[in-house]
Amino acid sequence: PDVVSTTQEPTFASTDWSVISINPSGFGEMSRDSGAAFTDLGAGWVPVTNYGSVDHQLNTVCDAAAGTMSFDYVGVWEVTFFFSMTHNTANSGRIIQARAYNATDGGVGGSGTPIGIGRDQGATTFSVTFWLEILAADVNDLYRMELGNGDAVSLVTMEFLRFASKKIA
Picture: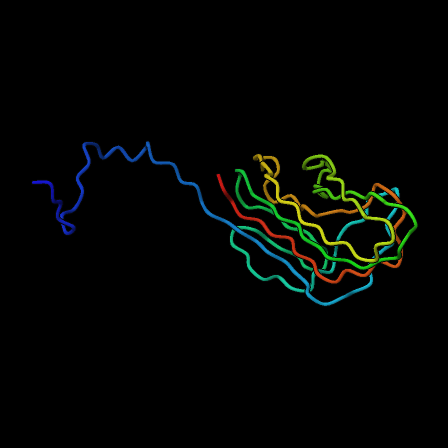
């Protein structure tokens, strides 16, 4: 009596399919794992471009050269941005920021996230994961990651880049 047959099909009291919502999945990823010169950073924002390759995409459109990703469905997307860069050293600590930027309408997907660069450090590695809500008006807009809005950092070489997303709700 306490044993349920694994071959028995489940039965449902209702066949009202209108209560089932469809939440399509989606993901996208662009990356580069070889060093490439990058623009010096400072007071303004600099778009991160030239990822090198599109590794995966489903219900997203990734443009590795332009560094943009668009999302085909409304919902909440988990976005991860990771980079490792070498740069000049300085006799004081510095702060730059990273942010998601909607290049289609000029909107910002959250405020900039501060990145601390320690005194006399010639390399920085950083990763941030955040949720980005895509509304109906934002579907197919081009999003990109940007760095800057902080202290001067020169002789920048991006050693590794990754911009990835997955739909979570």
